[in-house]
Image 1 (spheres, rainbow, N blue to C red):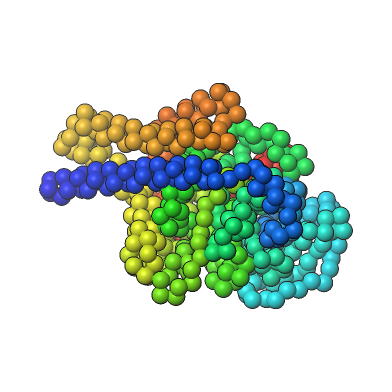
Image 2: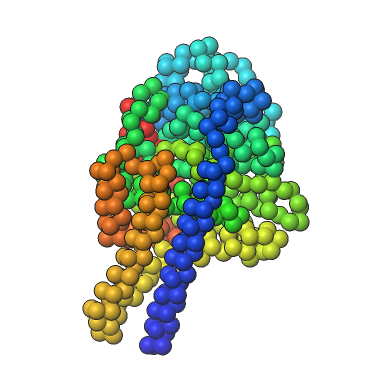
Length: 471
């Protein structure tokens, strides 16, 4: 019996050493890539893109379900983006609140007869609206079919060759679309680009324009600010460099329309459609047998702000759904795992996401349970347990601190010293309960997916409302 216990302890120790070593490598590779990227761009280049008639036009897709509190701010924000040619397509996906009504009232919409080539099957579209005051705004109302189905319905109406998929609760910086589109203008092989996602809690908007950028007001929100800085800004840059970025946030994806349609669009039944589509996109790009070619890039200066949950219940529900969606997406594309046909995506990306993203919460919670069990059984003493928890605490702090310090050397640094020290406080407190709470929620989601095949979307986010950005 003790042999098994010591084997498990040794396995867990090696597991976390490898896990943190990989994350350290990703953060370092990401920082090198971002520095290289920053040296290769100029403000004059973006000014030319903003003024040029040759810039590829973009259709911005915004799926919305019961978003009456924030949808006007979001639409205003997207309509005001600094880009030479873009349209905004808002899809009311069977809302039961006043989402459609507030759009009609604010933008003075009128119903039109408009149809497009239906290459993707969706739930029934009930009506299409346009605005005389905003000719680049289209509003579609349809029967409810989840987020992915709404995206597919918008693609039918899209006029332009590039699709920017975002959320009804997301806010882009004014030049965000310029930065996202730049790779497509300099390299024809680019098929999709992703950007940085940060919490919007703490932003102040006026008519869709960001007038003040602050931090989330709660400690739970601040912990997510740190988490997003570590994973979205630095780790994913490293993963992209290794052709292993298998999850592009649904809040910020720019993709060629013909590729999106060729892949069959978003999977309407997915628990989390963004990771499932990203994996299929990687499969298409890096399939050595099909030789489709193409490149996926990460744009570190394109920033989207999205609302994060600030209640423990909603936070747990979100992480539960993400965990279920991750397993669903990975196993739906299981043939890619350790398959050299897909290069680094198959040999590193897929195994990494399974071992160190999907199963990490289970290993960590198991370690805590095992430590407490051994302490109660008298096999180990308090000294050993304290050392175990201290090492876990320190390693978590190290990676988060590194990510935040790197961020402080970028334009996304905190607005003041007060905000900086709030971030440091969040780093120090994250491993004192918040981290364990999200890991436990993920483990519960994992068992619910495998044992009960749970596929619902969980509790709905409570929106901040007008005046602040939401996601």
